[in-house]
Length: 104
Image 1 (tube, rainbow, N blue to C red):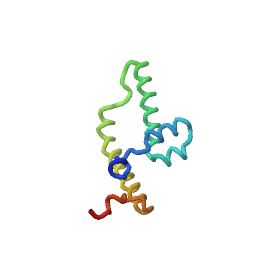
Image 2: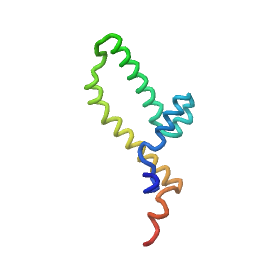
Image 3: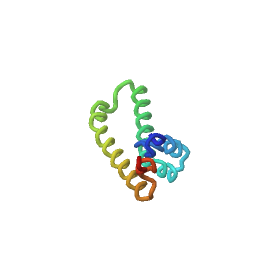
Image 4: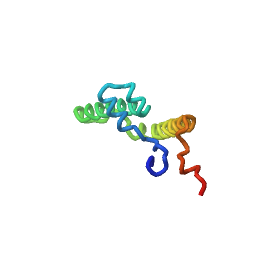
C-alpha cells in the first residue's frame, strides 16, 4: 500500500514491532507500531493457555465468547490508531504524496 499510495497500511511496522518486543526493546517496538507489544503479550498468553488446556485436556476459557466480544474493540482501536498516524504524517508534511496534489 505504501508503494502504491504513499500511505502506510494500518499494520505497517507491526512485524518489526513484534520482533522488537521479542528482543525486549519496548521503546523501539512502540515506535514501530503501538499495537505490537500488546498483541505480543496477548499472543503469548493465548499460547500458554492453550498449552494448559492441552495438558489438562479441557477448555479453560470460553474462546467463542472472547473472540465474539473482542474483535470489534480491536478493530476500532486499530482504525483510531491508523487515523491518528495518518494525521501525524500529514502534520509533518509527509502526506499527501506529491503525485496526489500534482496537476494533470
